[in-house]
Structure formats: structure tokens, C-alpha cells
Image 1: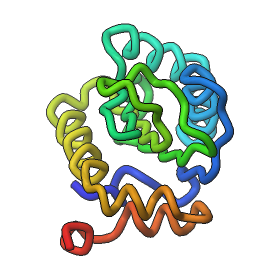
Image 2: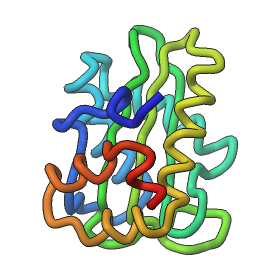
Image 3: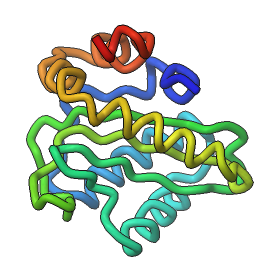
Amino acid sequence: MEIADLLSPDAVLAHLKAANKKQVLQEMAQKAGLLTRIPERRILETLMEREKLGSTGMGQGIAIPHGRIAGIHKMTGLFAQLDHPIDFDSMDDQPVDLVFLLLAPQDAGADHLKALARVSRLLRNQAVCEKLRAAPQSATLYALLTEPTAAQAA
């Protein structure tokens, strides 16, 4: 599974302005609602319920909020580069500025876990994250996120 299977160019947000975790999730849920035709409120509720189980802030400025939602027919990702880092209750207590939202069909099973692992692998690459943080616009972010795996490892 490649990132391009999860992400479309219109699902990438550069310089998202948000003051806190809830606002980031609201903004991303709104965009996800437009892309998936699932009510924004249901997406936000799913994400907030998942955050109650434990923060999806992985550390090193990265968060991967995710959830399973009935009515979504394929794995759907959104990526946001935040204008300013925010507190996300991350494991390392560092603020977050790169957020990859992942929504999965209710019956996704192992595919959901594979997609999470793929996104996590990509965002653990420090060189990729530095490029993402420096990218000036959504098109550049999309190109960086969807580079073939071999190029990212280099």
C-alpha cells in the first residue's frame, strides 16, 4: 500500500491555522466530510472518541489521528502541515505540526493497521519530515508524501 492510495491532492492542507488539538481535528473533519460525503460531525466524534483512548500524537511533532467510520468505502487520508505547532498530548510532550488523518471503512480489519503502519513509517523518516515542514504549498506536500518508497529511504 502506497501513500498515493490513501491521499488525493485535494486532501493536503498547507499552513493550517489552529490553536489547539480540537480545532485541528475539527478543521480536518470538515475537509474529510467534503471529500467523503460523511457528516463532519460523525467524523469528529469518531476522532474524539479515539483520542479519549490515548493521544494519537506519536512524538517528534507528528500525529496520526484515525478511526473507522461506517459509510466510507475506501481508506481515506488527509494531511495537514500546521502553521504553528500545537499541544497534542504527544508521548514525548512535544508540540505537533504534521498531522496525517486516516479514516477507514468499518470492516477494514488488517488494511487499517497496514495503512497506519505505512503512514507511521513514512513520518518516522526525519528527512521527509524536514522537507514537509519546509514545503511552501499543498502541491509540494503532496509530491513529497507520494514519492515512491525507495526515493524516501534515500
